[in-house]
Image (tube, rainbow, N blue to C red; front, side):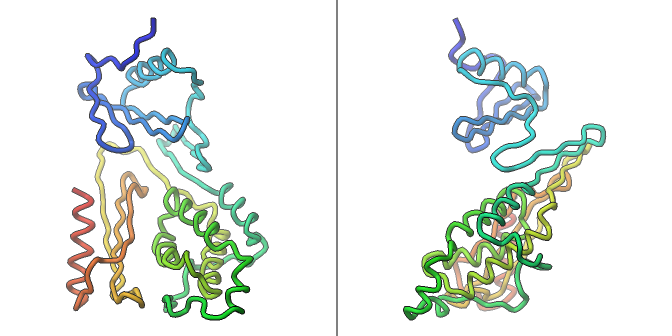
Amino acid sequence: MASNKLPVNDITNSIKSLPHMALSGSKYIFLVLYVDDILLASSDTCLLQEIKRFFMNNFEMKDLKEASFVLGIQIPRDHSQGILRLSQENYISKVLDRFSIKDSKPGDTPIVKGDKFSLKQCLNNDFERNEMQNISYVLTMRSLMYTQVCTRPNIAFVVGVLDRYLSDPVMQHWKAVKLVMCYLKRTKGYMLTYRKSKGLETIGYSDFDFVGCQDSKRSTSGYIYILTGGAISLNFVKQTLIAPSTMTTKFVACFEASNHGL
């Protein structure tokens, strides 16, 4: 009869958040679950095999061995160099084709310096509303959000700004979205790269856009954390207060970044 629980004598569950993590002495294993897809990553091969046997004995499932493609993300590896990469080149190509951007000219940057967006630009007449009816603004933004979250942190700021106008976008917002798509067309081969390292050092960066939101007059804070050469966590969000100075904005941005790091 198959066991219906993990071998707790060997493994102590400390599941507090996603991804799930289990410990066995100095050994550890991470489990990432999305619907019926499971990814496992462990510091110990024997522990990994033990967990896999547990799942195989208790559930009907297949072991697809080393992951190479998950939810639109390619995972190329170079074992000899100790390099793992995350790429969405194929996914981006499909998105460009889906929203008829594939024949557009590749872009140099995801946003034009000095561009400002606000709710005042939103639709205020029937002509503008009819103009936007056949444009898939929300669906395109969803694709950009997924790309940004998975492999392209360098578009996080502009995606966050354009996300504010999902309910009532205008042509100026759509042109900005297409600019991001054209930038992705030129850089779709870019990948997050992680290199094997003897020591693990997490490096964090923080920045802000002083009074960047034209509607609320609030600033936008952003931070990103790097481990073994690749991004592992990032966030861009409007600050909750209206800062009276750049110094105040800077302190808030640094606090949010430090708080996340801790």
